[in-house]
Image (tube, rainbow, N blue to C red; front, side, top):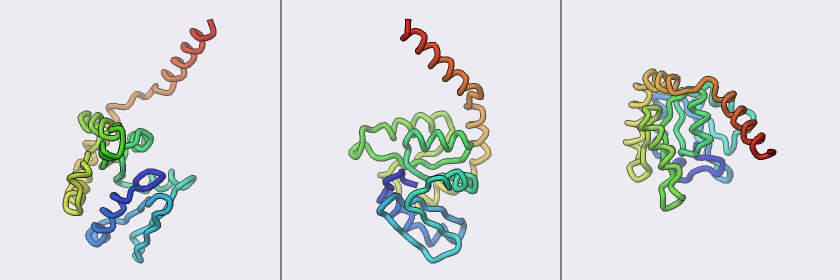
Length: 166
């Protein structure tokens, strides 16, 4: 997936990797709005956008490949899904996706494939590596989690509101 607008780079990378991928995997491809793409194969399904069905798509996924936006990362981490992130290069952004990806990669929670290194061969290699590491990645994600995070956030918001109202 390449975010709500899609990623022509990731879409093209998937298109060039499809022949190999379909020999090994079932693919759910979120192409983004205005980037329809279809492959006539029962192991491939594309969506321009996923709304309510996103939870089901995540549930049946063994691996997430996508950009490194904060929402996508936290969704993958919350679901303990192995991830390969291809951050948007700095020349197209403020660089926050690179920082997001690097931060979580240094914690051992996911793998990063820089866009300037991404091609069908490196993507296939990264997919294999990440699937081989899936138990290690899931364990690291589980260890990194803060089970009471929601309660902590709610309390911080209440504390802030109290200070502001005084």
